[in-house]
Image (tube, rainbow, N blue to C red; front, side, top):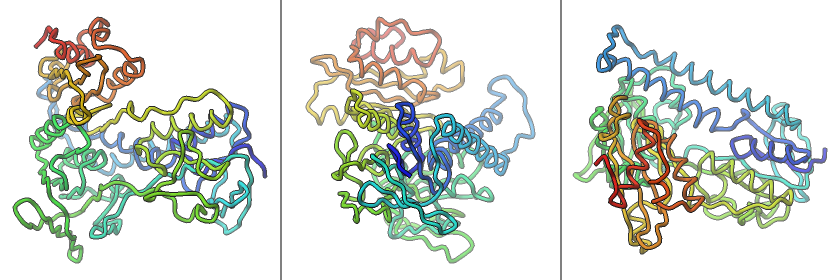
Length: 462
């Protein structure tokens, strides 16, 4: 059972690595203990977006009168929303199965454990163990919801993201602990369909990794929609002995108890590196992640790691790009190290958030003299016509050399707009080139050009 490449895990890192290897003529196998497509496709990126779309449609119908449309008897069918979400995920998983067959990649079901000598032992569901050998082995086993010591998940009253998208019934109230992408997306979804939502965030701002202006705008939008936000607060304990939950929160003004049906723990992720055989093989780890070089090689020849198991941004598109870079380097192609300073981040609550590069504070802390341009969607004809005037585009340039340092967008459909900035930064495009590139009107995307023009004192519509 010899292969050129064995990939452990079939998420957006693993299956992409396998397909690229097969395209390059390698005999390839993927080992998967659960569903093809991994967490992202089955329990993360894709099904959450399906839920969020259902919420958005429901909100549109509730506000149909604002658009000159009469609608009555509108109800959110939580069970049907969950069912649709699972259907979308299942269809996408079948798509990955098709890609495996198309590219003649062998899929091995079971739990993998790496061995010395570039071998992998796979334990199948029936208890049978089989050994496989490959010239190269890529570890792409992803991550799971992180548990805090005082916030143990029981899967029913204290839940992670996986349970949040498949609850048997809609909770009347929910406390969301953590306000990163997962936390605010679920906060938006449940609030929009009628659940009373409270966000508890340890840091001073929600979505704390974003530019401060973006964090403040999202807080305003969320509060307007009825979400309660507690910042600089921590959950000390949760009492689940009764019918619901009693959440003990330590905040700026002392302790308080919030009663709710469900607590969603959204405080980050933990890499799946246990019981993989790393110690036996001698693969080095640091702070729960596998250590690799620029080409994703571990310290042991022939063993590689990509995606959430290494210390890079835990994003599907990062894992996929790492997969391609890793495989192309193995194949002897010319490969470029990944530029982690130009990775877009997207959050799909409403309003959406998309960002890349330096925040304003980070740029100043790095010693740059900066030019900042900001264009609000209240001045955008397309946003006003669409009934989505909340938000803005903010751009940051180096005043001395004109380098595009960062961009931070919040508003409707901004996740579809950020790629322009990523591409422009990759090509070292100047602000003046963006201003002179004709953007279509009326569109949301012309706000990027307007924000750049504002940075250089040339904005027409402000």
